[in-house]
Image 1: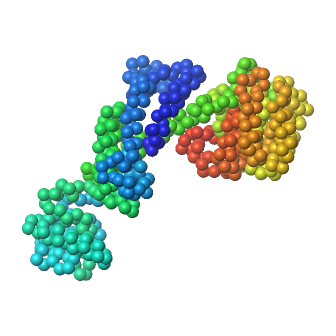
Image 2: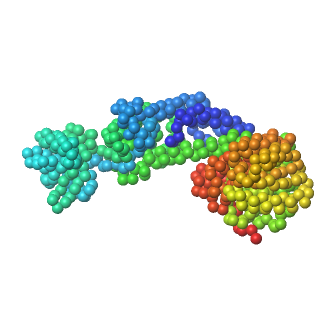
Image 3: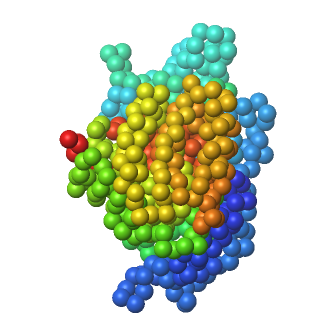
Length: 563
């Protein structure tokens, strides 16, 4: 809900139309319209993959008009009455720039002034109390005036705003105002203080006549403030924003189904915003109120919807390196049916553990077997569990099935020592496979190492060789941060495909020890490949969050340790 609709507006229709087109191509069952009331309830005859022809629909043009209405909420706060350039800076200190920001600047807590207290002695020390009192103006002394509540208890109302001249003048003015109202009962509201010297209210929050009781009695919100921004000015700005929002949201379709709102006793969006700032009843925990729960639920729904679109774009729309095969026979459903990978497994100096075989099947299904778009997956396993071996076998499968350019797999390691170890390990695997002479289109597998110690001329020769690889050859390019230089990234991203592949770039990007590399560093190499495999024994919290809360990344866990 905090995403700026002005930023979304130019791309929302394009992304949604692209998503529909891609899904129509994949499944041929999604219609090109948005339903306002969601999908039909699942039954034996229907599923969420089909849309009832009787459902009410709206066009994308209408959706855009609704978004243009919501764009009015992006009006700068300086457009509000009473907000000038000086006070605008104070709003900015709180991160408030637009009407939308004001709407979601919720109170920290509330003060209950909804009921009049008849006996001040019954109010605990430090609590807020609102009283109808008689002012004894003739007994006023300095900055204190005696008052009497409805139960006949005497107490003092004191004003003190510091020893400065301005503070003394303010206290004197407040005292004079209260004394002038002594002819009739007065409403005084503030924090009650009990001490040995007596009971009183120090610097009351509100002092109004009985006729103005409606301005005080009720539930009062308490907001976070900044220097130069008064509570009165902030509340006035929020109330004006609420009026604009209510007028706009009342003409837009409700974002949540009526059945959900009715079942959970939640208000509509416009009412929920008003109640979050101005509740009808006092609650000690405002986050538990139906209005705040409704807003939180909707925010999570919108977040999940945006993440779903992002995942779709990552897997289908933003993948320029996807393979479009002219030879479907190369798409082996399982690694056991692949001549190259099955031969590579047989040539290994050890047998794959059952957990390794299960993980390989999971990786294979995501990248090759189902042909369901781009793979973005984390392989998590302890040190020595065999993650590198699985990356090697999956790389062979991606090359054999002509993913991306169909000839090169890049493996990124954070240190030169680890890169050299990977090159030696995979080199031994490749030598054993070459000696076995597999009955596959790939006849030779070789290893190349690119680190910061490689001279510019040797690096150029290496990249040129990668661009001229024969169709029966596969290359594993192992490297460090040298793979991430702009020139190398551009060359890898545009590696030409073999004759049987219309794609380009890397067949697979393997990022080892991903927690030791920066986010942008990893993305540089990942965007060069048809598929991305991250490997780690201790993934960083951000990577775990991509799996847990957003679902942008899939997880595969490798159990056990190799012998």
